[in-house]
Structures are given as structure tokens and as C-alpha cells.
Length: 272
Ligand code: AMP
Image (cartoon, rainbow, N blue to C red; front, side, top):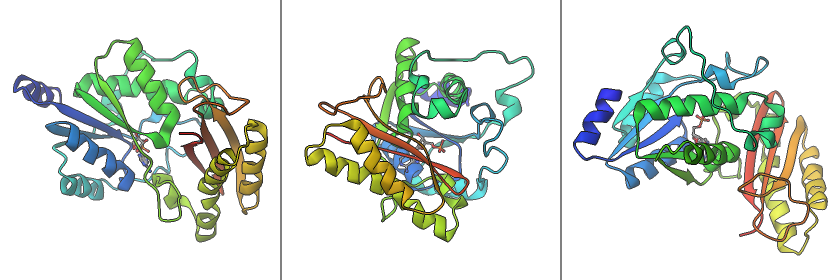
């Protein structure tokens, strides 16, 4: 991968990088398309990073279909796919952890301790191997995008971090590899995330500024659906991720809901 990347750089070509955990879908493909538009070459990585999964999370069950993934990248016009295995990424003696101080202390970081250390460390390593000019991340994982932006800035990595909008199913559900775990009934319930977000956005449009009131309404909307358990609903500053009590500037709503056993996340700007 390093040789490939150095060769391209020496030839004066630009590289866009899309890191993924595979089981590719339309959301991932939109990132690749963005990469194609921005750069001469697009590199995709597929690596289910064990260090970002907690002990009771779905690492062992995480869906996988390498042949299908490779076919999809080929059809999308991706130039190279990097598929390391966990032994190559974390050989015996590996001991470095990249950890941010404040951004992980919000949202998903609270219910997934250590998750963002795993993400920041693997992304640092992948960026060091692929050495792209640009790396593209989905707004679906909004906190992850904020953390990577901060990390790349703090560590002077000199890589352009580009965010890409959330790709959704026709009924609004954000596309995710984890949606395949849902039963037919749970798939119906999963609509509650998008509905809670759009309802909240409408409340703000109608003049509501009290974040607690908006969150309560969103919670009621979600709880009306069977098999849903709210992990968190937050209205936050899109840069610092700090909770915002009164909506009067740019704010983002982020939420995580368990539908059956699947933990789904989504987010949306409430103000433009
Ligand atoms: P994952 O394979 O889930 O780690 O995701 C790899 C990249 O794809 C991350 O930057 C995600 O934010 C992005 N992504 C996942 N789902 C979507 C989606 N529905 N729309 C846009 N980007 C997405």
C-alpha cells in the first residue's frame, strides 16, 4: 500500500481515501464518488477494527462479504482497496493509543468507553499507511468526523478531511451495515430515529427554543415504537459537541437508539 501510494505521489497524482469496515452500501459508495470528484485516485480500506468495539459489542457478528464489497468498489471505479488483517495492524508489541481529551466525552463516547481511542488510533495508522491528500468521512458518524478533524489539525497531519451527507432509505432510515440485523418489525420501528429528528427540526422551525422540551418530544416519538430503547438524545454545538440548553444558533441533534439488539445512530442539523 505504501509503495502504491508513494508511486502515485511521485507521479504528482492526488489520492482520496475512504476508510470503511466493509459490508458496503450506498452510503459508503457516496463517499467513494466524492473521492473520485476530488482526486485523481481513490483508495478504500476495509478493516473491522477490533479496538473500537467494546467487550459486549457486535465485533464477532459484524457482517462481512468481501467478494461483494470488491465487486462494488470495482463498479464504482475505486483504484485500490486496502484489506489489512488485525495481526498486521496490531502485531505483538503494539502499544500506541491516540486519545482526544474532550470530544469523546459526549454522545456515543459516554456509552462506548474507549471506542473513540480505537477509532483515532486506527485512523492515524491508516492515514500513515495510505498517505492520502484527502480523507472522506460520513456525517452519519458525526462525532467521529468531529474527532478526526480535530486530531488531524492537532497533529498537523496535513490531510484535508471532507464530510459527506447522510445517505438514507426512502423512509428516512440512515443506511447502515447494522440495519441488516433488524427483523421486519424492528425495521418498522427503526423509522423512529429519522422521525424524531424531523419532528424536532419542525419544532425549532415553529419557534421552540427549549432543548429539554424538544428532546422530550423526540423521546416520546421514539418510545411510541415497539422494541426501542433510547441510549441518548442530545442537542449539541456541532463543533464542541457540548449540550446546548437553548436553541439560538447552529445546533445539531444526535441520537442513539437500540432497536431490538441493534444500536442505531443518526443526527441532523436543527437550524441552518
Ligand atoms: P463504517 O463502515 O460504518 O465504519 O463507515 C465507513 C464510512 O462510511 C464512515 O465515514 C461513515 O460515516 C460512512 N457512512 C456510513 N453510513 C453512511 C451513510 N448512510 N451515509 C453517509 N456515510 C455513511
